[in-house]
Image (cartoon, rainbow, N blue to C red):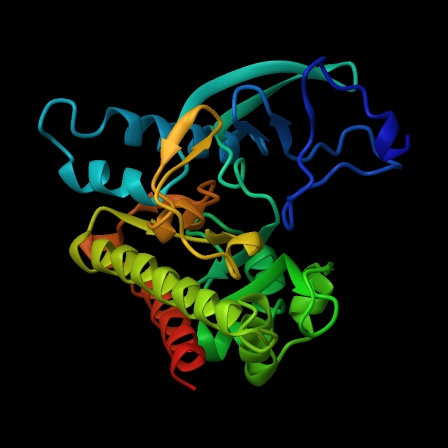
Length: 311
């Protein structure tokens, strides 16, 4: 079955900006990737294996309920670092009913969306993993994972086709590329993703610097949350870094109408977003300890972004 022949419900389509995770496959009708409901501004993520899917659904539901009664204020604070959750939805895809999570489409208003999935932590297997699963996970992304606590499953970035031109080209890489990276290669790829090495014009250099500062600010806010919380440990979870390339060379404007809503374009948070994703392996914190595994990767990522900003 060709990707274009996937049997999807009317009004839904495959998400073009998906860079990692399970995807539609030509030879396997059971393989289902992310869908997009462009009218509602939602991305639909299929639930994984029963135990993993239920765990992720419960996580989103617990976030939605947090703070309603004055309890779990820390969980309520986490909502600002996670895509908005609009509830589960059952859809028939390829003649089979499946359950999806309806999530905020983070790049909905972006003209040229750049997206990177960064998996966090040295350890990507959860407490219930079998010895074989642990061995398989330890063998993946060895160079970057052990030294930085980071993996790069995939990314998409717009780059200038030539110097001093508005023309662009799209570069996409998946997990095979990420597995080939050493620490220096990872850092170079991050600089490429942020257009820090291709910003030839003065306005684009200024835009790249603004981008890096905003990414750094959002990463530090997530780290601040982790430094306070002793509730949960996150395994095989990722950060999704998104920005709109078309804003790098544009002077800021006071207001614009995006999807029917006025947004302040002076605020880089309107075109730069860092969000935590993938919560199929979230567990109660062991012995009430901080999540050192996730924080190790997060601190490494902050240092990499700082090094690109200040070089």
